[in-house]
Length: 118
Length: 118
DNA sequence: TCCTTAGTTCAACAGTTATTGAACAATTGG
DNA sequence: CCAATTGTTCAATAACTGTTGAACTAAGGA
Image (cartoon, rainbow over all chains, first blue to last red):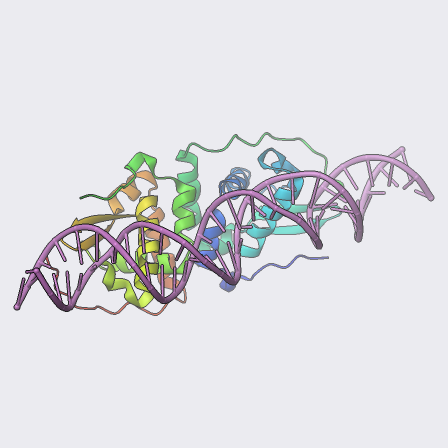
């Protein structure tokens, strides 16, 4: 089972900007960037909202092409689509992440150590 | 008479991103960037929407700290707050503008040659 | 098999957003 | 003073957004 993602050339700038213009989603992206290469499941973000709410925001990010979600068992492993974003909008992601670092951010996400059931 | 603007340290990243996540406003910013240094009045943007609508979008941009509006006679001269944005979020504006250039953009804004009544 | 874990979907809701036309204010020029 | 120009404000509306709890699906482990 796979989830729908836009391909690289379908990623739209206003949609990406709009999606990043929400503090919760910005915090998600920031956390993903800080753990780049490590796929994370949704429950890692529970500090940022309820399970339902996270599902909503993560779907927005995925549909915008900002993240990729891969189904592994009952988990969805979430990664930043850095290469695709860099290809499409060079420098954008980096400057957003750097700017988010300078901002008075949301409460940091704590590292819930989990065991992934594959 | 002056209009309210946030000062540099009050400019918020999610608000800026949210404001730029609208095709009309993105087109306004793009046009401002292409004419940097030249202050423009609102009627320059009439291709992008009705007068009322432009007033709305330009207020959003100003309140977010993206643009500055100076009252000159019956005109409001609008400029990009590039220095402030660069200071606060280095590289962000440039990458957004570059990305907007690559996108299948809105119909270009034609140069209505006007005489500013000061 | 049954229970648990991970996450989605749904309906509902309050709040916000974009858009419009009509009316208004302020300035400039005749 | 009168008229034209520039732009704002207002009320109305339709659409979208973020958030919630309850119900659901799917997979894994005992």
